[in-house]
Amino acid sequence: MLRRLYDWTMSLARTPHAERALGGVSFAESSFFPIPPDVLLIPMVLAERQRWVRYAFVCTAASVLGALLGYFFGAVLFDAIGRPILSLYNAEDAFDRISDLYNQWGAWGVLFGAITPFPFKVLTIFSGMTGLNIVTLVVFSIIGRGFRFFLVAWLLHRYGEPIRAFIEKNLGLLFTLFMVLLIGGFVAVRYMI
View: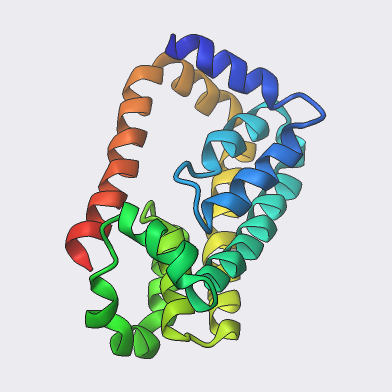
């Protein structure tokens, strides 16, 4: 089943709708969606390695726009939308403990969340809830998300065929590692905040 899902994702990466899907997932992941855009970015770059800059740019731009939606959820719609999203990650009680610290050190939090598997949406919502300077959010989102997506895309562009062979040979192991990192990010939200 995993092989079929991988093959389907690789074939989606070659369709005319792939870039829109990549932008949609990148946007949504920064504000509410749990699946990172890497699941589309990786096969898309492997399928068309010469378009790595474009795909990384789409991921970065859509992700930063999604961060603004997360900020909006926290700042304006916290009770209606932000609180339920944060409660899914058991991060609601953390707000009172960290709001002052977050505004002092929030830029580093945004940068950390933008680069790592930590659920970025939690930090974008916190940014709105605490009133973090929106320019700080945008600048550090561009830096962090740009670094992450351009690095991944460049590595795939540069070493594509060996990486593709490695992925196809170790698909089960890599999927398990990806899930551990994803779940680890959610666990970190619960216990580190």
